[in-house]
Image (cartoon, rainbow, N blue to C red; front, side, top):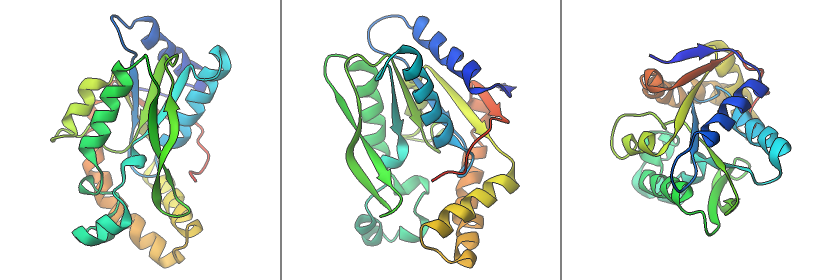
Length: 224
C-alpha cells in the first residue's frame, strides 16, 4: 500500500536525492512521476528537476517525458486512432521502455530524449538530453504503473515511482483550459476531457496502488 504525503517541493527533492545516495552498482536511478491527465505531473517533474539542478549544478537531474513517444498524427490517422490520442495504444510503448533502459544504464554517452510540442500536437526529436554526468532521471507520464505489456516493464526500470493525485474537479478544469488554449472550442474541450481523458484516467487510477508514494496537495500551476 502506498503512503500519501502532502510535502512541499523541497521535501520531495530530499527524497529524490536519497534515491541517488542509495543507488548501488553501475548506472543511475530513474524516478517515475505518474498520474491521470491534468494531475500536475509535468509541473511537478520539471520543477523537481529545476530544484535539483539548482542544488547540485545544471544537468545533475534530467527530465524524460513519456509524451515524446506519442505516435505521429499521420500514423494515428493510418491506424484509425486519432480520436483516441493519449490512450495506451497511441504511444510507441516499446520505444519508451527502450529509452528508459538506456537512460538507466548508459552513463558514458549522451542519451537524447524526445519531447512533445502541444502547439503543433507532435513529438520533437532530441528535445532534451541525459548527459553522462546526470545523476538522476525523472521520467514522467500517464502509464508508468500500468500492469500490462509492455508497460509493465517500466516499473522494473524505475528506482521509485510517485503518483501525483489531484481532485477530479481541478483536473477537469485544467484539461478544459489546456484543450481550449490549444485550439478546441470550450464545448469540444470539455467533451474530450470527459470522454477521452476520462477513459484514460480510469486505466491510470487502477494502477495507483503500485506507487511507492502518492503526492497530494502540491501547489501546481495549470499545465501548458
